[in-house]
Image 1 (tube, helix red, strand yellow):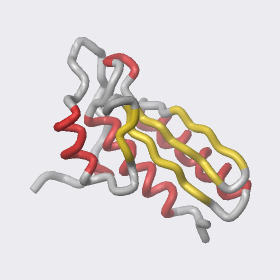
Image 2 (cartoon, helix red, strand yellow):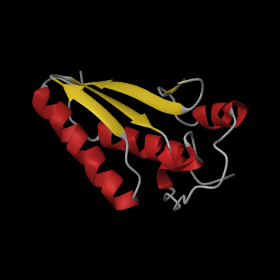
Image 3 (tube, one colour):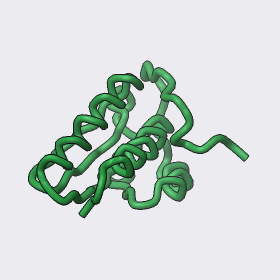
Length: 117
């Protein structure tokens, strides 16, 4: 059995490789419940809800720290009580295993925010 995604580390992606095929992405999607494939399988996305603006901001800051640590950065939109995170590997214009690793790690950040909505 392979190591859980949330325990893995992003590997540098320098481009020049094809993005995951949709079937490959769907296999990894099983390991990241709550996430969906968007843009015809080229992007991974999930929306989160929180009790207030402060919790949403705490989550966004946590994801930002995680992104800096791992060297892989998402698109994030947020407001009062909500945030949406979108992962894709820009260098290959699609999904890479790293995106699923980061999605699983993002879920751990959300779990650390008290009393989600």
